[in-house]
Amino acid sequence: MPTVPSILGFGAIAIDDIVYVDQPLSAGKGKVLQTARTFGGNVATALAAVARLGGTAGFVGWLASAADDAVLCDLVASGVETAFAPRHPHARPVRSRITVGSDGERFIAYDDEAMLGTAPDFPDEVLSRAAVLIVDSYAIRSMDVVARARDLGLAILGDIEWSSGPATERLIGLCDHLILPLGFARTATGGRSPAEMLDALWMPSRSTVVLTDGGRGVYYRGRDESGLWHLPPHRVAVVDSTGAGDCFHGAYAHALTRGAQTAGRVAFAAAALSITGRGGREALPTEGQVTELLASTNAPSAVELKSQLDTGT
Image (cartoon, rainbow, N blue to C red; front, side, top):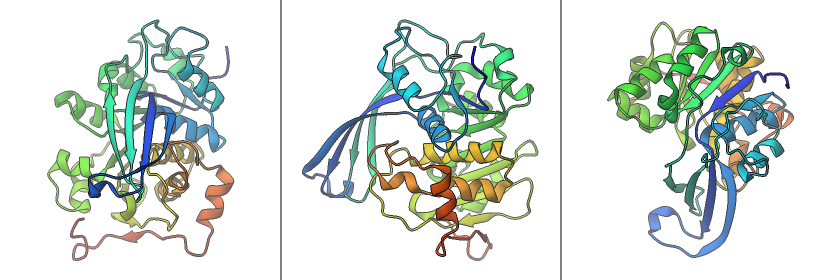
């Protein structure tokens, strides 16, 4: 058997049919410029990002049994290890139809009637050899595996975008590295400002809480430093924001395995090169590209949030 990768993940894996139009989504309609079919999904794209950055990544969610399954072949081609993933003849990906406007914003319509999560008896022997487990909202279907991974000492990185009630609350509690879209964080906490949301999501067991806010950058709090912080976005040409958050999670996990502190992990993850290409994976960056962007003269610096300035978005 191959070596267990440092970063494992299970959750959404998708085939995306993308339509690019010549107007922003707010226009209500527009002319089709291009169509494409790509592979996506929160965790699958995050793991592909890890591999592109030079890390080791393994998908351990349900995969189809056939050796020539398109999703399986794409993961392998992306450098993601699949040897430890449970197989089932009825496993299939989430199917998504995505409309991308001229401003790079997108609307996703998805069918998630699929086998998500992982096998309930997924072996501790495999989990214990990894360092990080990336999970998304669908991990509520395999909560015991997440809990076992946490008990085995893995860093649990949570990409949570929607809630199913108490099960999701428990999942959020298991994540010591919690990275949420700001919109969901607002819904989950009732907070009005990023500072209120960060405080509401903090607990002693957390290592980091990060709130991503698209073109406004990210807000974060870490155990290894004081204060609440805002990192403005890099100024790059936005082509397609599909998969940007997934790339962020993969890059963050990669930086975590390299020993970076909170500020370094967030800065590395926020180097937003993935939005400069079409689809979720066309422009996944290499480590050298990220390092070059971070060293550029116009790279943003984190600013501590002040109560009089932190009025929300």
